[in-house]
Image (tube, rainbow, N blue to C red; front, side, top):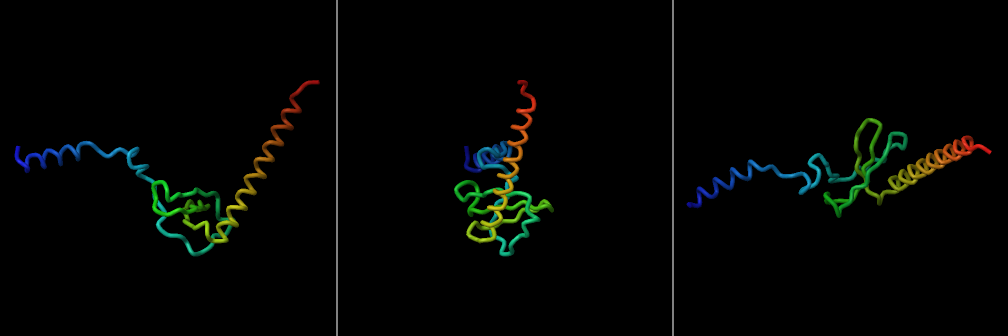
Length: 113
């Protein structure tokens, strides 16, 4: 076979078999490539996700999710980011304690003497 024929067959085979997302990570995953310089108001934050440089993306970042369904990339080195994360952890702890209290109270109310 000639080199041209082999190249043509290889090109056709490569275009027929699509790349699998499991080999390259999720295709819809957008990595942060830079950090915001402006602090977000805490009331606008609805949650966060951690991006690690040891996984798919090149930089480590905290991705804040906002009420407007936007994603804002920030660095853990900034004080406002650490403060926002601490406040979010505090809210989660309070919600968990309230839920445990409700479960305990409901459990006590359903027990018969």
